[in-house]
Image (cartoon, rainbow, N blue to C red; front, side, top):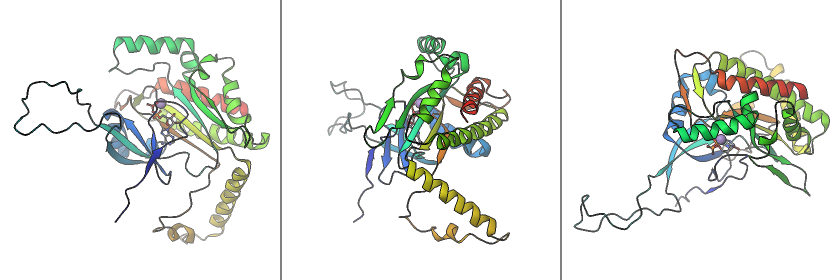
Length: 316
Ligand code: ADP
Ligand code: MN
């Protein structure tokens, strides 16, 4: 007997729709999505430089929505052409993507979702939706900076636990004070000033890399996000830094071609402990993303990426 894998609610989402799930170990998240996002992940394999900045795509799953039990098959004798009944319309089965979980390995992940773009809708959007999203963009830093804080979570210590900043938090900023939101994300938790500055510096370096990648890609993504995660627990932060230093040192002492024993030791080890990380950054949310060969770089997303870079530089 093999027990079915347990699926749990994912508790470290910073923004977006409810309904993100995770596997039992926490290494993976399972997110309901539209076919367009599946397509984008599947075709990312032919864009390796970009794919490096996406969560690892493990595949898709079909889950029965708990709210809509599977529709019973037609009663005997009734064919496909039976007369309409009072049964609720059959909802299409929800498709989900299975992705590596960015918050895995963090003791107290602090999470920031920055939504990219001044234009937040794609060509498929009805006029009403375009008007609504344009209005939000006009009233927020989405228009002025090409990005806004969509939500965040900061660990404030054992007594206060997590502070959650909902979608309205990021909507109050202007181009002039947007840096305060990023300051709140990095400097209002339990890390020391020095630790927070290190994180700001690392995020700046990574965002600069993302900018370089996007400048060489022909894609369009509307309402995608930069998802920033850092370790909010002071001790776990120091441990993760220490492990990085040890790894760097052991790499340095290895002769060229010589293998690092650690690397193949854990090949078949299903129960290896999660990696300890200082910080992580990926681009997520490709519900409105496509590859657009011949159309040049995504200036809409790039505006936001450059703004984020400048804010992290100010804080590092
Ligand atoms: P949507 O905005 O359409 O609901 P997203 O892809 O933006 O969907 O996901 C919603 C939230 O879930 C994000 O703000 C983020 O906090 C979390 N999330 C999404 N993908 C991952 C991932 N791979 N690892 C960790 N958290 C994730
Ligand atoms: Mn989102």
